[in-house]
Length: 273
Image (cartoon, rainbow, N blue to C red):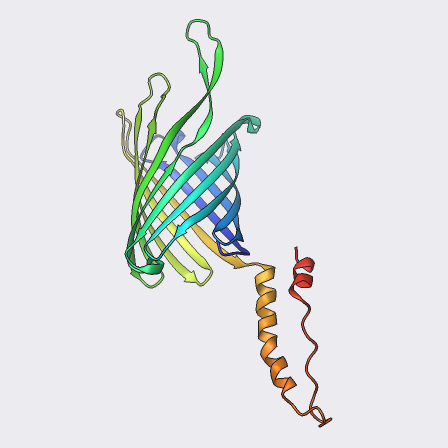
């Protein structure tokens, strides 16, 4: 995010079309992000989910940092560190470092590009011994990978295509080592300088004789200037008027004096935390 800018992301999804009604789900996600310094930002968010009958609800809270150590016209590298709590009584904890690489044919994503995101979630798993029925916990991890591409078809209009999958280094008994994942097709349009609308259709690839499923996501991304940015802009607008007033002949009492200077930025920020 830009330094001092607040980013608001909101998504709503419906998943499981093509499966039994008890396997369909509703979900939502809202995130607030803030640019701390150049190339370093923080975010706070929450997700919720429920079945099609609006029951069996669950929630999750997450916080994180992400930075861009490498930022060029044609190649970017982003690093993420994400923390999450959820489950019954928020007893489940997860930390996930991630890396994202972006390759752009033209600067500012003007035509075409590709991206690769690799995350390493680390979390606790509970196993039950089939003989003694005793439970034990251990710490496990797996790899989430997303490979995608985008096409800028017109000014402010983009089409995205991506494929996600997962690799389990220590799968649960009877589980697969590789999850074939899903394919997503998205369309993003910037309807305002600070607002972008998001839409996506995602197809879950069948595995182990399960039926295919389709999911839908709609959302928006709003990047709002902070009070600090607004204060700086207001002061910049007032400066030319002050300079013109100071060029007048102060001996002519019919010419108004220069307006009082605006308060310093520090005072403006303090009044708008």
